[in-house]
Image (spheres, rainbow, N blue to C red):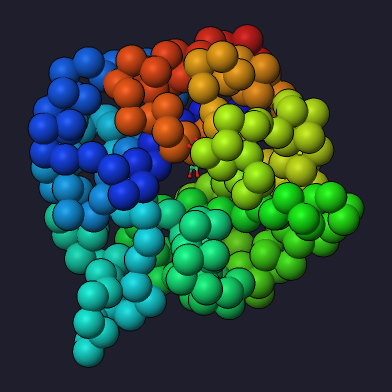
Length: 251
Ligand code: 13P
């Protein structure tokens, strides 16, 4: 059985004061893995303020271990200061920084090389869904990763399905829409390695809140969430973790 994983993507939000307030009100449960992704400058402050059982990570990663790459941060450096996870391929980076599938796959491999667990984001835009291309889009994003990353490494990390039209919009994919895509992703990985596919966690992201988390996490192939806006509030984020814990016991 897969352990639930709930992750907080703070994006470009937060401050040292916010972290102090957050850790005071935050609580987790034993049967759910939790990772928090603050802006990279706050990684150490966050990691040292939380119990050891709560992991921290970065929202993006450079591709090299070191070198003349101004502004980049290596996975090895993140690992050294207590980071354990890295998000790669978030749609905001694919859109804002024009990151393409190949670069995302290279970043996933770089995260693994540096000792981090990658969360690889995939997801279609509204126009792509309306054109009925959502499966083809996600398939292309996945294939780029499967071509470049040893599939066994996927079991170490997670895939996050984040439909772009559901991010920060308050518009969530229905549990059925999300389950359909998660099942497709698992099946696609199963064609390469069935064991990895059965162990690999697939998270849903896009306007997850305490109101919709139970219905989403009840789905067979939804193993947790990558939470944006609601993760900035310790009470709301803790509530989502508790819901994941209950869903895991109901399995
Ligand atoms: P929201 O939960 O704010 O929609 O953000 C989702 C997301 O992008 C998480 O990575």
